[in-house]
Length: 288
Image (cartoon, rainbow, N blue to C red; front, side, top):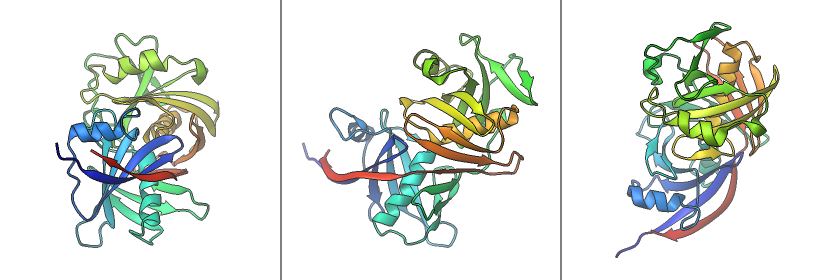
């Protein structure tokens, strides 16, 4: 059987890890099986997500584009905040751009990224989405409890937890716990992820409020299980916390892999901004 020798870069953003591929010269031609092999931690490289960096169409609108594939399933996904930060560090290190402020296209969005002086990356994550059909979320006959003017939903089979539901370019359900160390992430996370109320499945966040400007967070991600950090999950947790009256608009989020700063002014047209680290671990080649 013919094999393909593929160069890659292994990166992480707060412990959320990625295999990054340069597809700027030729389109990515990997099938699901090859993508899953790359993401396999025993037989491949190992990663939560695989990022394919691509050239953008000519014009001033965006500088580059990238696609995101789940490391466990090989499926293409919509958004990954930690991946966006790694993308910007990667294109700088590979000489694909010298711009510190970059506009990048994803499968369903355009993101603005800034390489800060301290090496961290700030991502304009765009506006959160609350319309149920756009998340998507099907409440059916469920009745929400309003708190601070925002809805919290009890889901069948996942009681007594109540969930704030929104999208950050991908769907999230967020609940509050007293202590994330003892939160039922391993049991409740998969149950809510695949709950029939979420047609496209959902990322599941467990947040612990430390103060109005600080929280701890664990996230069970779609098709991946719990990861050390989830950038869109951190944004969703802060947005939910602000709308529910628990948090102010500038919050330090402590994940198991590192810290992220999330800012949201709270208005319907306000974008969410995330600042955090992105690091290269090593570069290599693999036969697929």
